[in-house]
Length: 222
Image 1 (cartoon, rainbow, N blue to C red):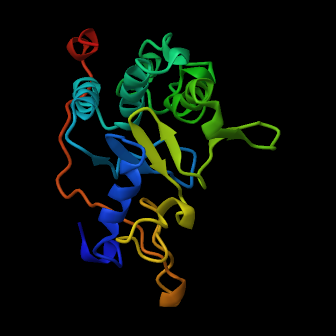
Image 2 (image 1 turned 45 degrees about the vertical axis):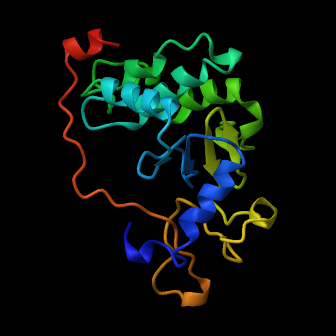
């Protein structure tokens, strides 16, 4: 972890303590844009559930994109605990083939694009299973959004809010500072004064895994 990523050295202990109240194996942070879960920053405990998730994610990932495969792996495991996901059968994996990230000229339906799966289909699946964690915007499109200002519980997994944690979440945690910044967020503009900046907890990967492109053999292993 890089030194500028957070102000308090005990901050990770604070996040761990909050997560322990929910008895989860992993946690991450909500994002400010239309994405269900950013794969850039994940905290994982060494549990059988975590190993199962990482095995599914690594098994099915191929090409440049990894988010849909992560979300699909989460849905697969959550379906063991949530009856409303029992009908999930890797639908998101149909959108991760290399070359399908942008709409092809011979594709006429917007439903055949990676962006549709990322911004629409994923949220429809997740809201159906966990309606209390989502809201619908008042725009004409009625877009489904995650409740990014709340701490959200999913089976074995919690999402920390995009905003600062509410004090009632950590008031009994002596290792927590007076204000707890988002676990994952965008560092405020450097031109602002220090008292208005809130450092987010950010992990930087210098050498990401080199995954091969999708192939018939990898698709057959699903």
